[in-house]
Length: 268
Image 1 (tube, rainbow, N blue to C red):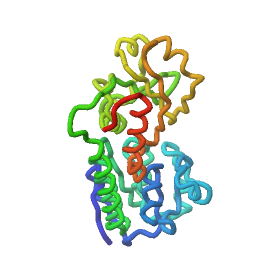
Image 2 (cartoon, rainbow, N blue to C red):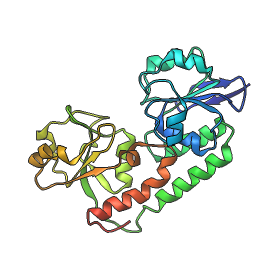
Image 3 (cartoon, helix red, strand yellow):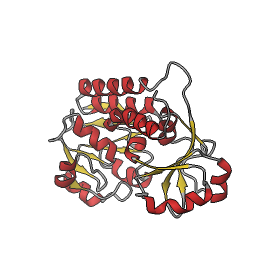
């Protein structure tokens, strides 16, 4: 028996350690578990856990991140469930925690993400692999820090259409925008507010970043954005680079550099 503290400050006790039957309720953390070498241990994932693709095809799916099937979870008899405060529903997590050890992450910035990676490594018996990965991510992001000032653009980052929702302050996406060299025009707002065209125009963004997820924006959706902000650049961006806080973070800095280059900005 071994106890751990999750990122919400909850104590989680495992009857057997390291765990042998793990369910992941979060796509970015599922990919992390794969990269830590937990192929045999992970027995259940969500329908949104698309990485790695072979897991998506072969692993048992227990529903969505916010629609977990308690019956499917019970059938898998997990000795550990890994979730996230934002991505999972509190009522479902409480119901699961009444029966199983549930470890929760709470990630708002890069430091939180690397802390989560290290803690999950300790939790699953892979501390060395997790520590190496977290250190690599930290080094990659430190390379984004320019020795001097570099051009920054005012950006609005849209995650949903009808209603039109943006990533505002107090979100992991906002932290990634700042790391990538953008100033979030809605950073003064909280979480994921609905934005009117009038508010968008008033923000005078230099660039509109339309995410590939959770809503799959495409060029056919550009029309209303062009009308509201005729002088702004409109770019479809890889949402995984801005919102996945697991091992995929190691690829984000290079993606951010390519994005800035496509906008004609000097590299970091």
